Image (cartoon, rainbow over all chains, first blue to last red; front, side, top):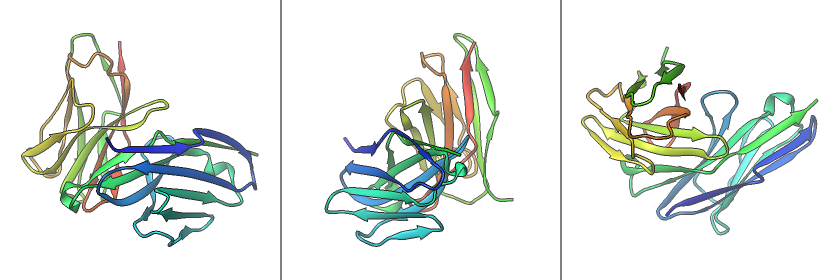
Length: 114
Length: 110
């Protein structure tokens, strides 16, 4: 059974802090790893990672995949209260795009205090 | 305005009642998915469909049913066999590997 584990499950930081969110996986037929941010409703897409060691960046957020360690991290620098959300990690598996399936971790609840 | 819509936003179910959640997309995506989200549980896959008139069970399909008669639409029925239906239900669609989500329906039991 495919498994995705995120840690920590929750954390509280102050504005301006830097945080690192972790995601590890045990799956068969790995294709890619996705990060989503969920505030009140629908998760919104952040990053898709397929190659080990290549950092994806978007403003203060960055993410990297380590296929050897079967893990990924999501970094947020200079956190703001608007970063407060649940951060979801999902791993795409399957032999082709048409047969791909996502397995989600339980999510990390980040609270940024003023 | 392209996207995924779900309705209703809130739905109340009585004991023994079947209810249907709507999901529509105008993104021309082939694949559509239904997830259930409970506090502290992440997203769990209920059903998915890669093509019209075909769908597959996910990890927690018991007590649910779906249909895929049109590419744009993938309704989910929560049947009376689902004993613990209170949850947040998310519909998603994808054209390759990245899934895009609708705004969700919160189902509550009266």
